[in-house]
Image 1 (cartoon, rainbow, N blue to C red):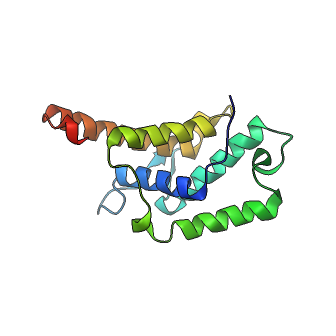
Image 2 (spheres, rainbow, N blue to C red):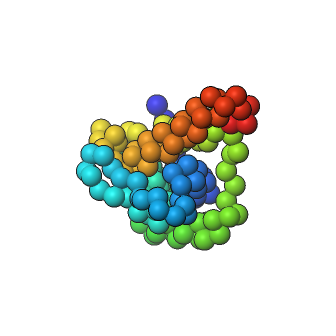
Length: 153
């Protein structure tokens, strides 16, 4: 299996998919949590959590490659990557995500494939963000299907 570094725009879109699936901004909805560590995950950290797990996976997959498995040129480039990510996410409404649920799940799965190299991936905060989002998307899809509106999903 080969792996690559998600661009900051891809991470921003993925985080938005997850946030919208889990009800970000909806009054009263609590933060999602990691079921293994029992740690509550902060909405504001989603992008960083997802980016860090992708980088960690690359460094595990390509241990001799350096920062992000060689996809970034040193620590300064890593810092720039995170700075770009912060910039990318400032205007949340400008971030484009797929409308259809199956396309949203496909984006989650595409990321998961790039971030799953570490043996403890299923214990990571990133995994639990993805799992929570997929669970919510599936629940919405099932509801639409039971109402006969599956073509809207």
